[in-house]
Length: 335
Image (tube, rainbow, N blue to C red):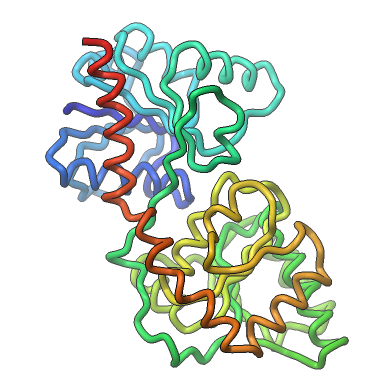
């Protein structure tokens, strides 16, 4: 099958959406399909992928590529990318990785999805926005993220994500303050990622008297990241908004961490039976769960027993086959 992913954001940009496109494109290529990724993201690096990456293409060239394909997949609706799809009259799949706002653009995207696309989504939470929308849970890469050692974990808590306000880094810091003041507990914390809130989080950690507990690492990727996660007991995902899904939770689970995350959006689906959730923004509830997670190891191990079954649904091969089954169903219907 000839497949195009139209993804304005792509590698070397870092993010869940970019990883979903990359992982699925790799897996579909390994299954023998011819895959191209069309993106607006420029790169000064050479691409070493088993598929072709087309960067910054013109409108006419985009139409020509889409005429080559049998199916075009967008990860979220791109209005700019929809016109070439409409002209090429190709099978059109949207893999929804988020919700659309109430602006005119957002309303147009919902119309495109409803009237022209085959809709799949990364979680039941996102699927509720569309009729006849199949849930295809997001993948992670088990070749990179896996448990090296279940017991030798010298560090306590790890936060992984872009340092932006909606990721809830400040909620984590305030919960650490509660642990210190009310329970005399000072767990070590590693904050992995970069973003505009980094300076504010460092200032807040100083104000709360937590700086000696916290290490800011910046971005860490690939196998180095997996080794780092394997040094920690608990991953904290304190998102302050309704996450569409939460691939970081899968990576933490795969590396042997118990995941403690907020209860909104699709994050509870990503965590599954391998962790616990707290009411979004509730500092007190988070601090209690962190104390229990860290200092009751048998409780933590209980959740880790569920990891293999949960993760099996999220391997790249399983997710790619589910996507192909949807495409084939509609493609055969067109014949």
